[in-house]
Length: 115
View 1 (cartoon, rainbow, N blue to C red):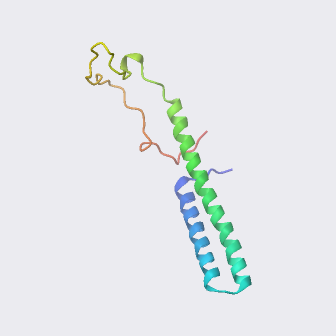
View 2: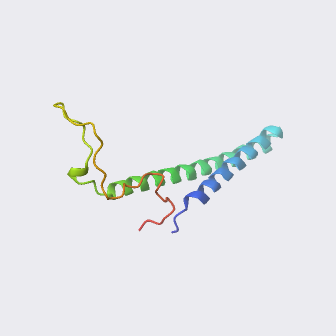
View 3: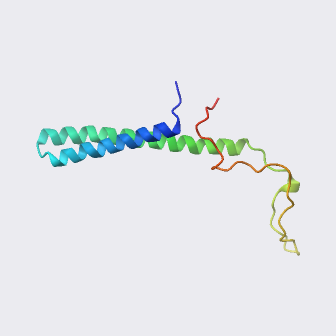
């Protein structure tokens, strides 16, 4: 089974929701009972499908970020930022280390495949 990529899936979800809105509008503009029932039923189905795809992509991306964050090892105790002690602790920033910072949500590529 091929995993959906985020951007095309979000575009498809937006298109489905807009098509749903258009169908429901046609149902309001054409006041025949059968047209209203058909437009509302099909429109509701398309809208639910679009929202489900959107929710799936959002949950998958959030899960991916948490997995990345969990797999990144914590810094050694000497480099951890701690609050100053009550007995005259220093408020100076910690020394700069040569290790790169952990990736943030802006640095994460959500479209890569998971093993």
